[in-house]
Length: 336
Image 1: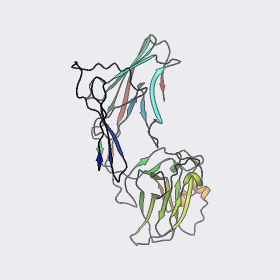
Image 2 (image 1 turned 90 degrees about the vertical axis):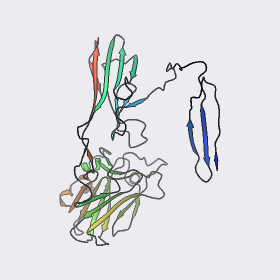
Image 3 (image 1 turned 90 degrees about the horizontal axis):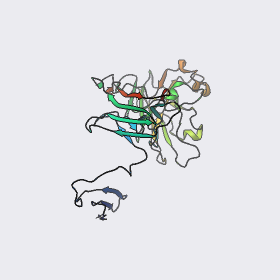
Image 4 (image 1 turned 120 degrees about the vertical axis):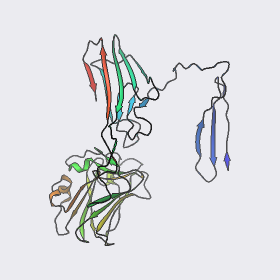
């Protein structure tokens, strides 16, 4: 069953919000706004008196793999994550030392060309800026594959650089292989079926032990019992932690299967892993020293997760802000 409700408004033109509900499914709410008639005018004057307090304009073209944003003050905004994806963790913009802009104007001269122009006024001083992206000549380059070699990663190749910053920890804990609503899976080529000592390393910088939202992850190493873990409850926020397993190549395919997935009871289905170590079973491994990187050279396999070869690796691009300063009596400032 589908129900549609219509609510007319008189604002010089008609707005049509619709509410659709489907029996047996969660309600789907959306708004369809249709301009049907204009009372006696060919155009509607827009004075922007009700503009939002903040906004962000994309610099990328349609279909662009990377969509940097410029905020309402002309600053480059990026690193939206991990969650709630509303505020940038990195912001780069220009200003004047000891001064705040009194007015800011921003526009895009051509809607088909993503060049954003911003004008900031500081009394008599003015900063004019142009922001745009410069793409490489060959934006899609093949730098290898993750489907062969001693380490195979499946279920996507998401990487989160500088994801965490735990103190007194191996640099591998800073970057994570990330699975957005999907597991992270590895196939590790080893010289014999095993058994092997396997350690999985994590550092969760986002979840809080006191939060009602919990990230429960199921850790699977072939030949070993699964473990359901909450990293922040086991170690704390942004603190490195390792989980030990005794794994074995049970199916005889020459690879040890490792998977990090979302537990059925979790409220956060996004999973990650920072590092994997494989040792002989007769090696004495101190977990605290392992976290610091002291056992890396002893490992048969040491994997800094998130640095696997990528399919169709994107070449580096440049996001540029060209700033010009007029009648400034104080020094220009680059704010990061």
